[in-house]
Image (cartoon, each protein chain N blue to C red):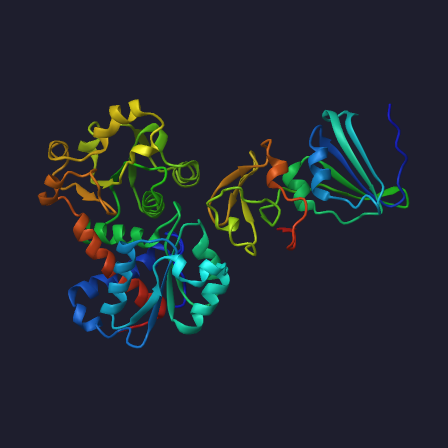
Length: 160
Length: 308
């Protein structure tokens, strides 16, 4: 049994499907010098059997659009004064800008560096997204999420 | 209202807006002299990042026949692109001089980047293997002129349906009309891409079937849209030898077809239509090229908001 102390203020991303936690952590790219991060893999879960959990100290704002993109079944708990002040269920974003990188070498985004990478949800069940420019389709259920989801982007990140 | 808009994809305009363009094209065909000065003093930029003599000539002829003028480049090495200028900056600069621009680019979505960077109307003249909406307008005007309607058609598309952008655009555009069925004739390697199958055909419940050989479906077709199958697109030599004749239209195959089946081809043709077919009244591909100029005249006038 692994015990991790509660945090006073921060967020807990819970019920992450086992194996997805690393992808989320990779994307969030938390500054390890400023924040304490606890990452549990394969913790016991009544809901999923196994789950991943991420606790981040002193961080409240996370990009929910991205969480919804990678694992829409996770829950985000906002912790204030050691207690859960808010429980948020991320939704699968309809459109994401500068989150998914288009991997189609024929897409204009491969040469036009300032063009925002825009993807639209076309199939919620399979979490499939279509590139605004070249119509290439990517599935967020695939194994290449780490490759196509940006860790850090020069432009603004947003999901609608 | 089409004035001030861009044409990036075949579905950018509603069916009614398309009709507006075809009606104007009809008028131009009936009395071209009346429109000979419609675009006096207007300047069209032709930005061809990859060579395409046919499409460029068609646009240039269209603008010149409207009384307008044309400037541009026909390969990127002769332009600032060779110095690494972005598409956005190029179009912003061009917009300082011109009233409307036509862009062909090897990268998919490039004309969209251009259109988002300027108020000037931008026309996509082909972006990689993606879209070619003015070819679609050409194809549709041909059907409009020759059949009078887009409804109740069984449309055969033959050849390279995977990389053939004219095919994707035509399927998109025709899928908006009532009771259109598609017969997709191609080797397995060159079937339509997933996004066309899923997002257009399946999503809109449009009947379609995929077959390997033309002969078996020819009698059902009201229209046959031919494209070129390149040897290098096949995965192996065996399949190429087995199937190559299935994608060549010749007089013997034409005998299997309906008396009023239209044969269209975006051109250039290599060997996929035997020259003997050219004299068949059902062969419309050269007429189609002429319609292409007229529809581009109508498009330029509409986007510039010019009325005669």
